Image 1 (spheres, helix red, strand yellow):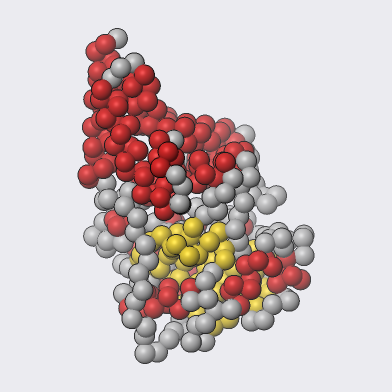
Image 2 (cartoon, rainbow, N blue to C red):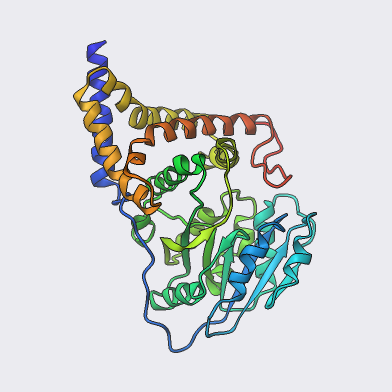
Amino acid sequence: MQHFSSALSGLALLGWVYLALFRGRFWQILLDERDTEPAVWPSIDIVVPARNEGEVLPRTLPSLAAQDYPGAWRILLVDDHSDDGTGEIARRYERVSVIVPPALAEGWSGKVAAMDAGAAASQAEFILFTDADIEHPADGLRRVAAAAVARKLDLTSRMVRLRCVSAAERLLVPAFVFFFAMLYPFRRANDRRSRVAAAAGGVMLVRRRKLDEIGGMARIKSALIDDCTLARAIKDAGGKIELTLADDIRSLREYPGFGDIHRTVARTAYTQLRCSILLVAGTCFGMALLFLAPPVLLVTGSVLGAVSWGIMSAIYLPMVRFYRLPFAYSLTLPVAAALYVLATIDSARLHWLGRGGGWKGRVQSKTPL
């Protein structure tokens, strides 16, 4: 038993040394930069896929309508067959045109189909895909466009600041962003030599020419994780992508309880793992080794367990501070990891039952595996 504990402690420590030193500095906060503004501003259409978002639109659409962008721009809200008056609410706002897409075609995910309907109505040089729950600063469009032009980007993505107010959000939201960055190190995604490709769906500015080159949204029509799938398609086609964190673009989506975040993760986790039970098992083992073993080993008196937990907490701290939480939250990653492991297992269960990918009354994975 002592030998097993020592081996486990050693493996966990090696894992954290690798993550701290050799995983693309994923734990360091990478914020968007301000770029020199172009002499000629490109035309942009803002496409907002929205399904039953009537409650949040009065808080987010005004921020979009108030953009100070110097070039030609407009807002295309795609009312994805809502039954809560989403379209009627959107029509109240200046610059907003409402599009009603055709019935969802076989083989398409709902959000991607809505994004496709918005793209089909656009002739602009760039399309900004943004979620209906995102509140934008007045210069948000100007800044992301300046970055795209200055750095010749085909996909410019910003991971917005998620809401972090409730107890569930404070425990799990910074951990979610940390795990995402660990899986898709931002600096590697931004490196054209790296195979890593990622984007955050809250804000994605796409060069229209490159979108057409990859075959439009039809290229990713069945994707549940549309942002990273689109980034993969664009990067594979030789496109240049960029993903950073944004401090002043905010998601207003509320997650009052732990069950709300559990359901959100369970919706796509199994898809993220390519619907493979082996990957689910491997992920759960890896998460247990890295995040759960160190505190357990510490209780048994393992010095290596203490060192591992110390490294874990140290590299989690920048994300904790980014979300303006007390230092003590840097010690909570093992608890958050355990809850995410449970959500991952539940994601597989839902897909096996033919109930995977549920969102706003739709189930995207209808066929049991």
